[in-house]
Amino acid sequence: MNKVYLGSCLCGDVRYELLSEPKAVSHCYCSQCRKGHGAAFASYGSVPRSAFTLLSGAEDLKAYRSSESVRREFCMQCGSTLFWSCSQGDRAGWISVALGTLDTPFKPSKQKHIYTSDTATWFEIPHA
Image 1 (cartoon, rainbow, N blue to C red):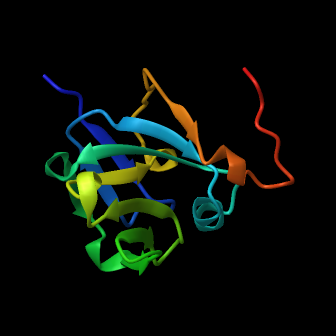
Image 2 (image 1 turned 90 degrees about the horizontal axis):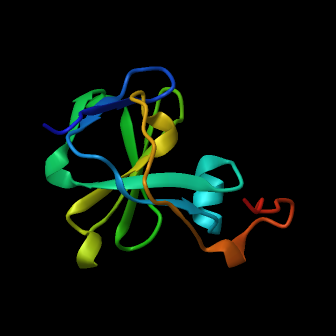
């Protein structure tokens, strides 16, 4: 039986569940992710859309098209960045979840750092 992962925004109005473990876990340093999170990088994991359910707060979600095919969603009440999705290509059937919004403990087996050449000048990626 698969584990169910629950998540929510800061104020708790938007709640969701994932019926599969997030895949393609990445820490993105691109300028769009940095600005969207207000941090040095954004951490996301992806699940097939069929494994994602919005439990509450649909009326509190606001979407922003950061490019022609990418839609980013956040809570209008507290401002939490929650999801992004792509409407074209091989990722069209997936939704990416901001891992900081998970309420269920999650430890990925693999993770990667992407767009590291875009790292903010004020941040140095620590070497493990």
